[in-house]
Image 1: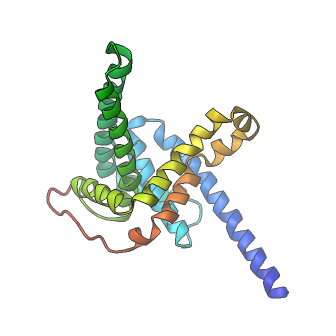
Image 2: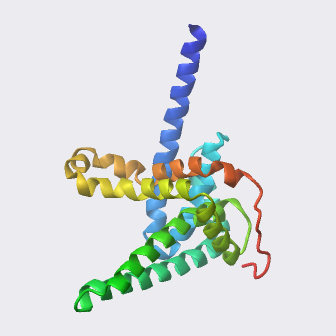
Image 3: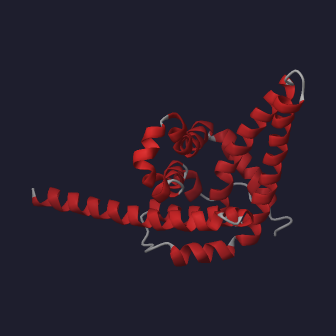
Amino acid sequence: MRDQLASMMEGMKRSLNTAADLLALNLLLILGCVPVVTAGAAWTAGYGYVLRLVRREETGLPFQPWWEAFRANFRRATAAWLLLLACLLIVAGDYYYAVAIAEPVNRFFLVFSLVMAVLLLLAATWLFPLLARFDNSVRGHIKNAVLMTAGMFPQTLLALAIQIGVWLLPLFVPALFYYLGWLWVMFGFSYPMYLTAKLFRKPLDSEPRDVDVTGQD
């Protein structure tokens, strides 16, 4: 009985520590994403931290490790993020043309933009964890993100559903956000990131199979 109680207390303590870490990390992610250009580096640094949490490494509060990872990955993560953002803006332009300009609605551009948006977001689900975990060129990371999306499609789809669903849920259940909106402010970015890291832990803990050493940034 005493051992069970000790185990329960230890689990509760670990959960509270994780919640405190994710709360602090969420604040850092919000601040890091306010200047849109730095969002990629902020996201990469966040994944670097939650991967350590998932492995139950002693991390302490995320301020110093997050900032160190932010600076270390800034160039590469920013280049990858700006490329992704440019692609998403092009896709958004195609969608706008299909539904707002074309008469009647251009079904080809509508379907094309929706499919491309989903594919880009699926690949992005892997891109930033890979940037946080492995040393590679931007081109190599993009290639591996596409390969991992195809090779682990169910997990990737689930991870994307978690990340998008967290923010779509209040749109469908406004009352939920009205009463519990503080949870989104405290954990809206960091907790989905934490769940994604748990889903992707096994391949991210393995050695990279395809490292592109040409054109290192």
